Amino acid sequence: MTDFQNLVIAPLNPTHDRTGFQCGVEALDRYLKMQAKQDIKRRISRVFVATKSDNPKTAIGYYTLSTLSIKLNQLPEKLARKLPKHPVPAALIGRLAVSNAAQGQGVGKMLLADAIKRTLAVSDQIAIYAIVVDAINENAKGFYEQFGFTRISDDSPRLFLPLKSMNL
Ligand SMILES: CC(C)(COP(=O)(O)OP(=O)(O)OC[C@H]1O[C@@H](n2cnc3c(N)ncnc32)[C@H](O)[C@@H]1OP(=O)(O)O)[C@@H](O)C(=O)NCCC(=O)NCCS
Image 1 (cartoon, rainbow, N blue to C red):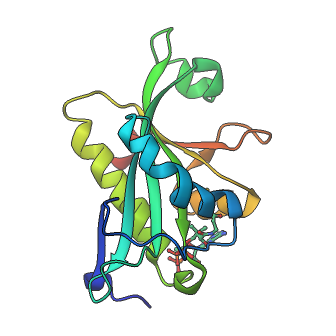
Image 2 (image 1 turned 90 degrees about the horizontal axis):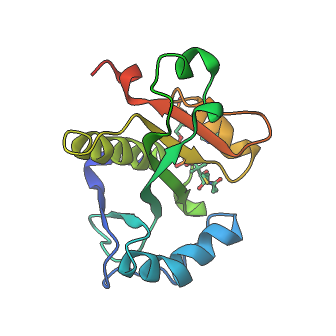
């Protein structure tokens, strides 16, 4: 298993080497190499990168964080009934990926925990009802479901986790 003490998760910066990043899903590799910097500059997403402290340049994982609003018809009726009749604010983990060599060692879990931690921190200042993830495929849905995320519907890539469910 990865030595978690040894993992650093920080905003993408110019010292990060992304050139060799490969996670098995080409679109996610391409995003980190070609698009991430531009999205940060335009304030479309924040991008956080995992490195090992003994190799602080090489990106071994990343995730993106931004905001969105969820329409009530995209939530289970049981939850929607208790909410005001307009879209609710959410944080979106749009992408999350771990390099092939680092997969299966807890890095994905640490990235998700870091995204939740950062979302909880800002939710003191800006209300956030839930965390939403866009899973790139069925495999990824399985990963998120393990941590309590619920599918919005079977034909949608989106899953969500109400912050309330974390007993806050
Ligand atoms: C999916 C992905 C992010 C998981 O990252 P990872 O570092 O390999 O996962 P971890 O080692 O942190 O696994 C944490 C837990 O999730 C489980 N898990 C990992 N992938 C899973 C999957 N596809 N389905 C169900 N459970 C999964 C692990 O068994 C582990 O369980 P445990 O804590 O009980 O041991 C990674 O495999 C990846 O980048 N895949 C390609 C890109 C992708 O599919 N991204 C998904 C989001 S768009």
